Length: 303
Image 1 (cartoon, rainbow, N blue to C red):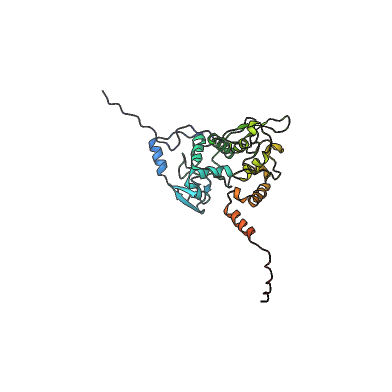
Image 2 (cartoon, rainbow, N blue to C red):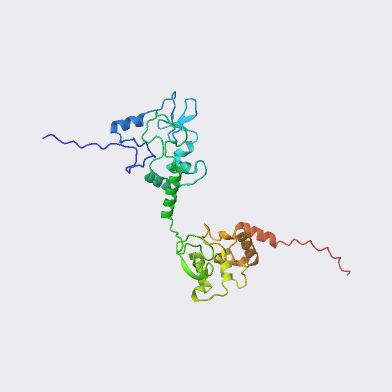
């Protein structure tokens, strides 16, 4: 009886998951082991035009390039060799600064496929007339939507049940939400509080039905005071009393420049209630120096 031989699995340079059309040439097929070995061992011809290893743009013989794995690599793609995240950042932002982590770059590659030109191509293959021209025309928008989906899935923060910002600081996303007795207007939805503000709302007794003297606790929560000081309200208006509804990306962002002025007044009036930064400490030392002119010397009394 003849001995059965185990079939060899074709060696590929692509992920196991099928890639969408438009990322890689739709006519691409899984190469055999011999074809893949020959492709990986191929080298570009300096005397003929060929595509950049990453962006695929055609590099003429007189152009400046470096050699990476047998492929030409243009000067613009030289910083992108460090990782896939840099390639995706360049594709999404088209030259602007879009920071993507290495984990996010790998996740984008799993979802959309490998973006580099060398995947499934030979080093002698001609390139394209523009950078990343071998990809789909809307790949930048598609990758940006996928990136937002990846970040949203890993972000533990969520919107409030009423899709509004925090009642006090106005932040739009938080790990947990607690209902408050306040509303965004007479007929508008109930205002919810994030965990940082809820601690001060409880300290003011609002959760127990008390609706007085909570303004000093609002100031303490906003400026980082360790304790609330009765009478120190400074006219601060919480987010639920403003015209905002959707919330802001950062806490207290709705205050704008008023936040820095409020913090400076609290540091000046109650320095023992806050933890001052190095800059605030230097300013406090300068303000504490007596700048009044010295008194003229008095004549000695006659003895």
